[in-house]
Amino acid sequence: MLKLSLSLCALGLAGVLPAAAEVLQLRDGAAVEGRILAEKPAHYVVDVGYTVLLVPKEVVVERRETLAPAPGATGTPSAPATAATAMASVPGFFTVSDGTRPERSVREWARELGEAVVQVRTPGGLGSGFFINEDGDLITNFHVIEGETQIAVEVYHQRRGQLERHTYKQVRIRAMNKFADLALLRVEDPDAPKFKFCVLGDSNALAVGERVFAIGSPMGLERTVTEGIVSTKTREMEGDLFIQTTAQINPGNSGGPLFNLRGEVVGVTNMKLLFSEGLNFAIPVERVIFFLRHVDAFAYDNDNPSNPYRYLEPPRRILFPAPDQAE
Image (cartoon, rainbow, N blue to C red):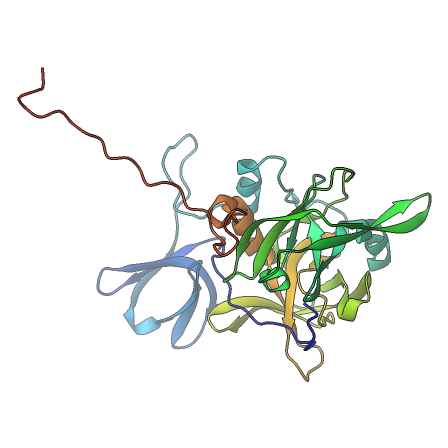
């Protein structure tokens, strides 16, 4: 986000959707289930979904893969949900790529995806964001809209071969997760058209050295495209994992998408190391999918702006008749 101090916030992240989970059976009978990110000489690095654990090898007696449920089986599968099943749970809300989109040049994708990337303005600064459906739902960083109630979204519509900027001022906060640094907004202007939107990809499929690019509004320079490579997919910072990239990110890029060459969102840009070059970071898209799949848990209560979450009423107690009153 571009604030008066021109600095980016570095916030913690919450749940992750690990894939290809494994189980480490421990000596005391306990077990650790998650995605093994790395195997070091003395320990395993395990992503358990909400944090990363270092498990000493000396306490591990067995390492095995989780078993997928048989076809037609009921109950909860032992492996976490994938992006494909995530899409099935919220049809029409957002779209996850099946991985078959062809690779194209950054120039072609920038022209096609430019309308789906927006500038998010508040009285305190600005950031970036991107639509996830044609109805006006968009993702940005929590720190872009933190403490703000007046939010505007600037969109560049392509009409008659030219780009026309339009500002939408009726923007509602639908959900937010401070610890994941994610927020879901919705444009509710009555004259809003159907929006171009981005397709979510799979950051687990990224390879180190793969080319990626970002679109955003660094320092308020809207529709800026920067290109680079994936430096690492699993940069651990304060217990959370980030995509590290050489694609330049500056204040104002916060909340914008990081794309692969198939035009799929693989991350949400949210910070860089100050006084450095080429050390930029993005939230893996799996965390975005987790956030969207569980959006009701992070729903923002517009009637109580000081409370970012909406809580369900507790279940009512069932009253049973006294024994002497029972028939």
